Structure formats: C-alpha cells, structure tokens
Length: 252
Image 1 (cartoon, rainbow, N blue to C red):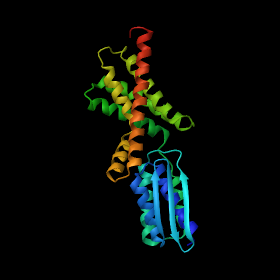
Image 2 (cartoon, one colour):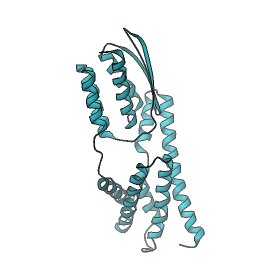
Image 3 (cartoon, rainbow, N blue to C red):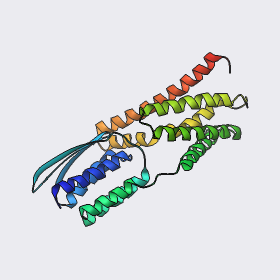
Image 4 (cartoon, helix red, strand yellow):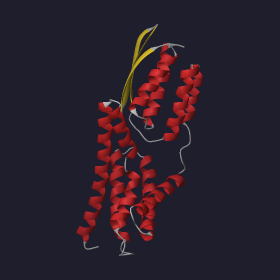
C-alpha cells in the first residue's frame, strides 16, 4: 500500500478515537500499531486538540498535523474503532476496505432524542435517591433532568461556545430546583440541584486526564483535568448566579 494511504488510515483512525473521547495513550498506540502493521516506522504525538504523526518508509519521511476542533464521549464508537485497529494489525487490509469501515463507524446512528432525554431524567432521579433524597425530591429532579436533556439537544445543534451549555444547564437547574420547592416546602432544593447537575459533570474527561498523567502524558493529562475543572466551575457559576437572582428578586 502507498505510504500516503497508510498515513491517511492512521490519522483518520486516531482522529476519530480522540474525537469520541479516547485516552491519549490509546490514540498514540493505535496510530503506531497501524503504521507498524504495514511495515512503517511511526512517531505519534497526541494532544486533546490535535495529532501530529510522522512516519518513515521507502518514500522517505511523511508528516501530517490534524486539528481536533470538537470532542464528545461515545464509548460505542471507541469500541468499534478498537476492533478495527486490531483487524488492521492482524490482517493489514486494503485502503478501500478500511475507509469503508471508518465511514460506517462515523455514520452510526446515535441514541434517539427521547432516549437522551430519558437518560438525563433517570440519572437525576437515581442520584437524588443515592444522596438521601426522598421520592418527591427525586421526582422534581426527574423533571429538571428532562429539561436539561432538551437543552443538551438544543446546544448540540448549535455552534455556540461549548461552556455556554454548562452554564445554562447549571442556571436552569438552580432556578427550577428552588422554584419547585414552592410546591413542596419540606423538600431540600440543594439535593435536587446536586442530582440534576450530575448529568453535566465531566467524569470521563477527569478520569482520562488522570490516566494520561499516570501514563506519562503530562501535557494531555493536565489539559484534560483543567478542562474538567473548568466545566465544574462553569456549572457551579450558572447554578450560583441563578440562585442569586432569585434571592435578589425577593424572598423565595
């Protein structure tokens, strides 16, 4: 296979892994193994926002830099990409076959809108019960989870600054949790808020950041942990500002 096509396979597979939330070491290892399966020496340098790959073969040295502008978490696609990379390592298939499989993985249907909203609602419901809330508080969190799920779908279609979604989610969760207590004054609004905002906490990003640090990827690890802490701060700011506006407006 031509050297340029091998590099194209490696960079597209690595980019997809990084875009769907894979760890830095996994992306680098996948790129290196793909190039090695076709008999090429490769060096890969991966950051959360980009990939640099350089390989050496009969045609000399080839390098490419790929910018990753958006990232999400999709463990199903990561699993499919891992299976593809293992197939490449064992069989070294032709370029067209690999590209067809990559396109199929990228075009997989994501969860339906009702499923995303339902997961958001039930996550809030379950976490309120885990934090010691009663049934009424869990039901209130369930309602707020539905709204947060709808907000997530709305922001996923826009090209707005990504942290706006987290701020808006925290803002809505804070205001609605306190307003719902007017219907049942005996409930604890803070438990409702805690259960609702769990949907937005960056657990995967924080875990990947720690794993990157343990594997020696200092820059990527600190970047991921910094991003996770920023998300937490923005959610907290949205919640706090929402509650502050309620108190300024009068006793609630």
